[in-house]
Length: 175
Image (cartoon, rainbow, N blue to C red; front, side):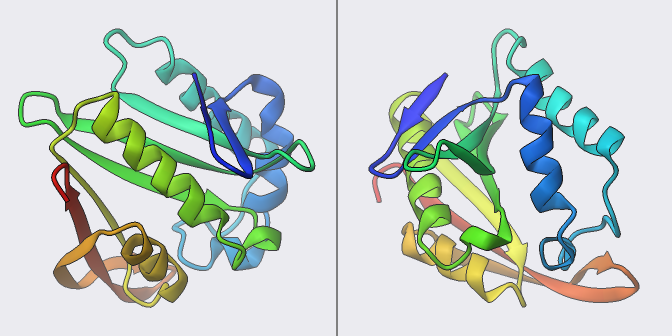
C-alpha cells in the first residue's frame, strides 16, 4: 500500500525499516511522552514486525505506514489508521516522527493523507485521535487537520511516574 503527498511517500513497512525506526525511537526527546524508557534493537524489530503482520490480516483493519521523505528517500516516522468498529465506521489515527524532522509540517502532511485515505478509501464516518495534553506540537497537528477537541481526560496516563492529561480529538466524514 502506498499513499503519496507533495513531500512524502507513505508505504507499508518492510523488515529493513527497523534501523531507521531504531534511530528515532532511541532519542530521549522522542521518548518523553512514551511509556518506554529506552528501546533495544530487538524491541524495534518486533515493533516493525507487528506492522508487517498487520498487512496480512483479512480484512485488513490496521494500516501503519512508514513515512518516507521523498527528497532524501529517508524513513522519518510512521503514521497509521486503525479501524475500531467497521459497522459504526469508526477509526483512530496516530503518528510519530524522528525528532530531526519535527516542526516542518511533515506530521500534518502525513496525518492529512491518512485522514483522506480513511474517509475516501475505508469509508469511515468518524476518525479520532488522542494525545498527551502537554504535547503542544501534537495538539497543533490534530487541530491543523481539522479535528475538534471532544474531551479532556484528567490524569489519564501514568508515564515514567508522572500523571498526564489526555485530549481526545475527532473529525467526521462530512466535515
